[in-house]
Amino acid sequence: MTVKALIAPTAFGVAGAVFDAQGRILLVRHSYLPGWHLPGGGADRGEPPAKAVMRELHEEVGLTGGEAAFVSLHTRPVGWATNVIALYRITGATVDFRPSLEIREACFANPARACEQVSVANPAAGHGVLECFSDVVLANHVVKRLRTVLSV
Image (cartoon, rainbow, N blue to C red; front, side):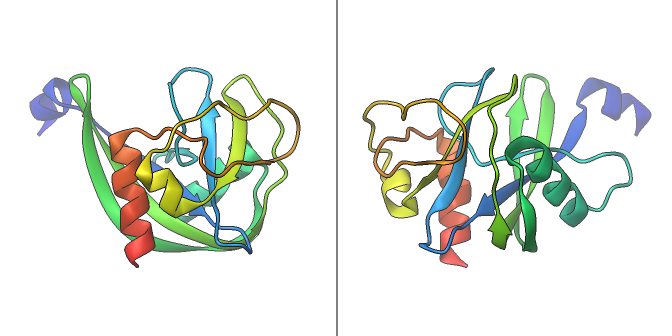
């Protein structure tokens, strides 16, 4: 087991599909990745994933309140490692986004249009959560996760 862990490490992370009252989904644009993504991050050692997703979303987008419901588990290779991501649906939360070195922008997008990968210009930068509908480009793994959340 130890040799396998060194040769093919696994990282455990969480992602949150945060929905607002209009049914739009929160997406973020990182400073180090192209495109728009679901917010999330790594779980600390021994940290329950439901707690990790709420902590990560608080750190990244100023999320407070709400409830996290487990949706699905996803894997994808990243270099020689494997990322295992626990996906949660977050409802009833409040977002108070402020741009940071890690997260440059955030927007609420129509999930059906986001899955269609319609592309226009990026929304203007600034404080607070921007509303964007058809102006998001998503990586394939993000579209897959979105479709999983929407089918639940």
